[in-house]
Picture 1 (cartoon, rainbow, N blue to C red):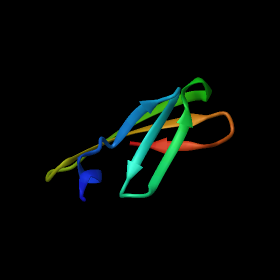
Picture 2: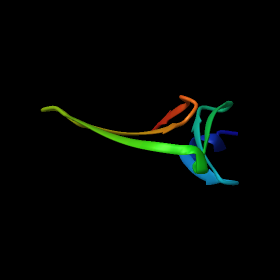
Picture 3: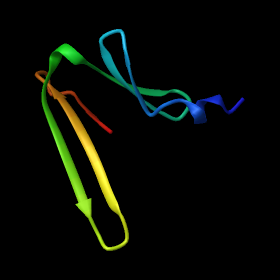
Length: 64
């Protein structure tokens, strides 16, 4: 019943990078259309956040 909790956050599938969030929400971006990758690290005293963004030519973006 709660199998979606054990699914990976992102996966490569059929030439696309697919990000899962929850049961129904998915965000996709084609690998061959990615033109820029941006990595951001926010370091604080209590924790560290690492985010990676993928951007394509049409302005679509996918953040992990």
